[in-house]
Amino acid sequence: MPETATEQAEPDRPDLDQPDLDQPDLVQPDLVQPDLAAIARNLRAEGMTRSQIARSLAVSTWRVTELLAGEPARHPGLRARAKDDLRERARQLRADGKTYDEIVEALGVSKASVSLWTRDLPKPPPRERGTYEFERIAAARRAQWDERLAERDDERKAVKSVAADEVGTLSDRELLLVGTALYWAEGAKDKPYARRESLVFINSDANVIRVHLGWLRLHGFTNDDCSFALSIHESADIEAATAFWEGVVGPGGRWRKPSLKRHRPTTRRKNVGGDYHGCLVICARQSRLAYQRMEGTWHGIVKGLSGVV
View 1 (cartoon, helix red, strand yellow):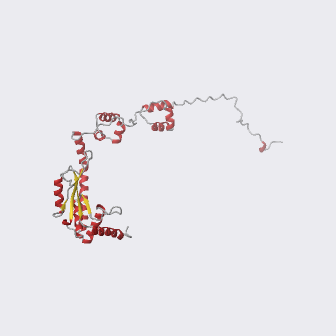
View 2 (spheres, one colour; view 1 turned 120 degrees about the vertical axis):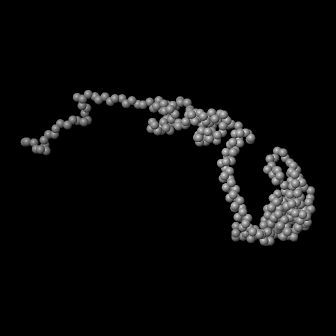
């Protein structure tokens, strides 16, 4: 029977699973692997950092560390993009005894760069007062801050002036409360284990002494009811200090012998010079009841704050 269309023989197809014996074997060329270690070392010699080498070779920094095994460490003050001429000049200036600020001013670089380049060099000795370099640096700093400090000083004075004007004249009640709080902070106080029910006050501020004297007037004490004594270092001008306090408190009263503090040469005191007048001690005689009223007034002030603080 003749073959139908569906039964016609298909054309021969090559068997993909069988090797073609008629074709010669194709030889694949060997791929040449680059010497990453040599490349990494060359890049390192050019001044690149590990991170830059890693980006250039598309590898991790850990891989770069392996490739650079055995390479000597670079100088800690060298960076990839640092300018060699500026770095060398900075190191020379540092070796000559220049400070960071002077090197920054001379080279026009940041202080961080100067520190990075020269931190292995010894620190120069401090400049002595009176030398040209010390005075020049001090003058530069003063010029930088004088204007700003003057503005702050003007602002400070303005705020204090406005606050002082807002107070006005004190009433007797206001003076009573202010004087009581001041005494509780600075005066001698009675203790259960040491009864001292008398008004004894000591301070070195002349205005504080004036407020305390005004407060004593409210309790009926005059200068004749008080005794005064100077407490001061033995190295100070005792006569000048006594005259100063006599001018503050005015006439009257009994002046006792000054109490002298021993001078210690090793102590660096700030309260020296012509403005140092020591402390004035004021004792109000027969002031037991006045002391008790003072302490009661203080407790009243504290009680009056209930619900406020």
